[in-house]
Image 1: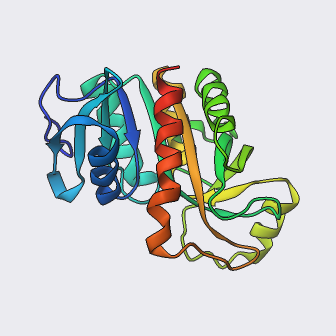
Image 2: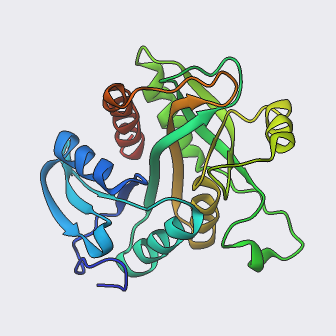
Length: 234
């Protein structure tokens, strides 16, 4: 048990899927895990442990933004022995070829700053995904009839961003989508020598203004969860 995770030793699997929304953790556990048990509900940040194809899996909400994810990822790794952490979440598409419901597999994560920034001082550390997870996720995605993109994402500190000039530069330099957690997850995985990947569903698009209606999101997010699980145990 830690400050933010009420689980006991042994309750958390070595493989953890991390949606931002705790209710998405509940939905994913109920729909993809066998014998899922609630192992955390501190501050309403739900976590479940069960099995998928005989493998133990925990699905733990991370909250919104890099500071929140940093709390949960640190405790999962340091105190509960998590070895593989996969973010499953939504993102905003930035490139014209990226469409609603497509999946982005984040090879790298650009950011203006994260909770780890003070450690690096003047160094611009380049957070990146674990290659084995990235490769396995790409193979899993290719077996589905779903648009898939592999490349860089932008992890932002702000949801209501008013830096149009910054977004223009992200698009200009090929960034596929924007979200709020991936860069810190990749940095922590590097620090603790763990595996990490962000598998993201495009729920809206910054260029076109399109957005998925809420009643259509779960079907699209299901592909993302299956890709993450197959990649974790490839």
